[in-house]
Length: 344
Image 1 (cartoon, rainbow, N blue to C red):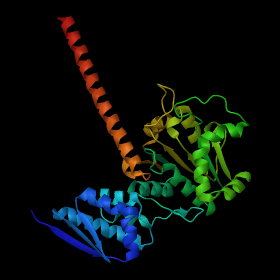
Image 2 (cartoon, one colour):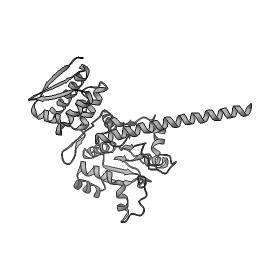
Image 3 (cartoon, one colour):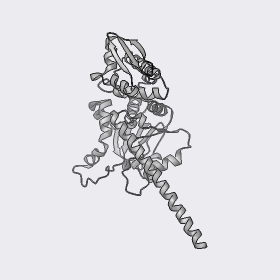
Image 4 (tube, rainbow, N blue to C red):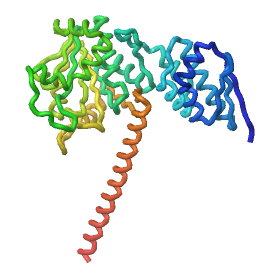
């Protein structure tokens, strides 16, 4: 068996960025590709027993260093995604995504797509009037939609932002909540407030909310309204009923853009209830100017463990569906056999 080696030179600042805290980024590449990576001065040496793995590690490190030279801080998500895309023979993915800046948070942090799925989602929002962002937790569905809405608002492309979601508890009954009506609904809308505070800043948000230019309200408040010249986001759409979804979609007026986000695997509706999001996917899939963007576990940008959790649940649910299908087929065969026996 042979032994192969490649080397790359880079400035110390970029090497520090590449290695990460306690060398976590480099250790991830070493573990996934079965190579050894050593830093000597301004040079990195990559070695291993398989030429293909050494070459792959070399390309990943080249991409990460180029990403660092553009002024970016390398995060664990960048490393994981670069490795995953390299396995699918898609090179320089991070560099292709880097130019798609949406806006900056109030602290100056840039907001941009971090995966190809997120880029497709953002592109659809730019080009379509109604966009459905469907995918698991942590894929940035709501956050990117909020960033696009705030950017359009600041650029005077729309006159106001309307954010809404169904006021449904996540699998539990909270009972009576104290305070006025706004205090009662605020807990359900907290995730939307959090994103607004981070991107826009609390002071700017409060000022625009007092003027009525930003509205955060439960879905029930939308009935009877016509929403013109607005950026409208419906979050947690999997918890709408078919009637609520139809009501919401028929509120849309001229000059408005609508983003509907949801995770079809996390419904909090009553057992047996049909989700308005599921019906909308079936009914509207062939209409022009409506886009359905499906994000997957590959697009999860939270802690790497979240991506593993999402994948584990996807495998578990897929296995359950397969076994349920086999059981139904077996039961169907038994039923047919009984009918044949009775005829005899």
